[in-house]
Image 1 (cartoon, rainbow, N blue to C red):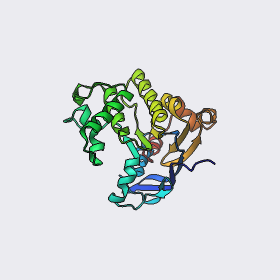
Image 2 (image 1 turned 120 degrees about the vertical axis):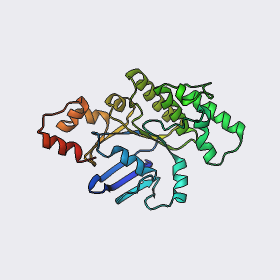
Image 3 (image 1 turned 30 degrees about the vertical axis):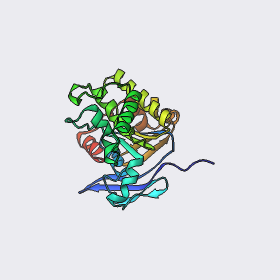
Image 4 (image 1 turned 45 degrees about the vertical axis):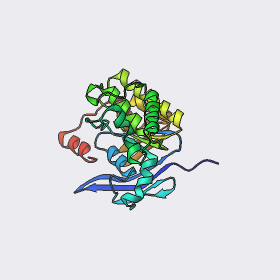
Length: 262
């Protein structure tokens, strides 16, 4: 029997002031697989991720984690959900005043772990997984952009979550380092059997890591399927996005098109 999706998003809406950001998003995130969300800047992708761990509250719709609605839960009720769902923020969000070891160990300590030996062993394990073994004492200022992303990845998996959310994991990285991050995302999924949801503009990444791809357009669900289905689509919007191709529009039309989903 097929297992139900780890995450289910139903009719999600969100407005900031007079601007409608999410306009009824529907999405299933299968357990143990990698789902990639693509779409133009301002289409609501990062806003959607923040709803999935309760950092933002929707105006309408529902979010189910393993069949349980998290909409309306208190911070205390959200705590066990957040232990099951890790997140890699776009810029890593490392603490500049902490060593690599302390950055990675932070979620463990926040969850109440106090055994120093156990913490050190877990940190060493996840740093080895992301190819940063022996780097515990370095400070973030001494790390390259790719190394910072890998430290953030190690921190995201230190509590062994069942699901990891990635917000633009290859943003700002060169193609070679981006490829290494994609390899790590696949490695983490296989080693820890995690469900992954990845927001990206990088189509190479989307095709390298995605089992399913969702395309958001102006805050709404527009496409959901395999990478083969995406590439075979005759829809001009999808083909333009894959190719990174813009179409000439009048100034007012272009401004309306880009601003509608911000």
